[in-house]
Length: 415
Image 1: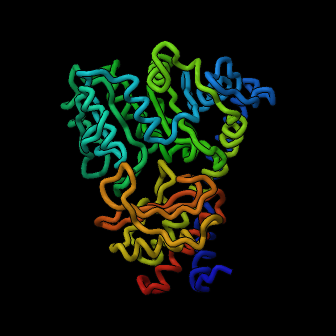
Image 2: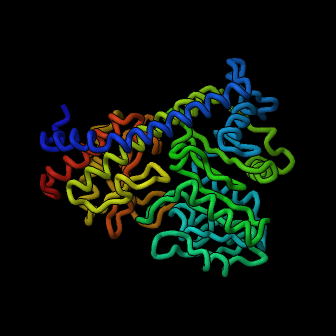
Image 3: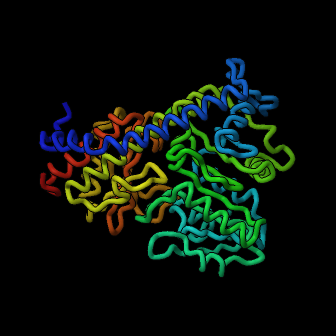
């Protein structure tokens, strides 16, 4: 049906057998998170009465409030903000940072450069309304030779004015590895040992439910059209953490004084809660698809990270393809495997928030949903493509095969 070379299919079947033990480990994480979420929904008394529609100011929105209680429980936090008004992961991160930082404070990134879209939020790249324009001082600690935060450098860079230490769990558009929950918690512990009052913030995008627990941070944020929305959330983001800091973020999102008490949920709590409920299964399938991709890349001699047997902190799988033509070919294959707009050909373009043309293959039901099957890449050296998502393992697996098949048809790889 899909025109995939028989040799690729035979290789894929062998890889599935080879990865059985890794897949079993992912299933254990999936099962644990599924029961954790179910327990939180039962504990908070979720009922059909919470699925009514609120509008206007959103006063007394019980569905919104119980959803945020569930998120707080699931993320091991005191409070959470889960809103359709947060339109992306970048928006959720910016809201959290603007909520707690003031002029003269220092923001220290302890995991190297942040994701491209945050460079303008911070003001590393000039942008109206950035943190730097508001008087925030930004510093950045490079990773060591093993792609781990350099603790000696971090210690030397922390000053009395350091208000927030920012940790990016996923790799962004870099080839460094993602960080596991245990590694992040150890890093937070180290920072708190220097100054317990520093707010430890985690950009959790792409990492939710890839491990048994989420990082124990003062603030954590992400997008609902990634992992926690389960492929159902049509928009939205979340911020979780201490009551004080989540309230500060809510005052930034809404208005000072109103905080978390306003903001209509517009009937979305039913979709958000159902998406959260199925998120572990979706994330588990995406994780298996990423592992499958790593093993297929290994078999075909394609440079990739992480390896199939490495512990993962997110759902992202990279493949360094070496040329713009190869990246475009792989992305064509992903698009051809999509349920929506499969007949489109993705082209690189100047996307808002990025500093170079970016190609994105994503025939998704929800625009920009990267928990659905997608692949994207900045069109710059070393021409690495970033693959993630798939609402089921079958679809994620097919996407890898279609991408590889397109590389083979184009003569870029040999089978």
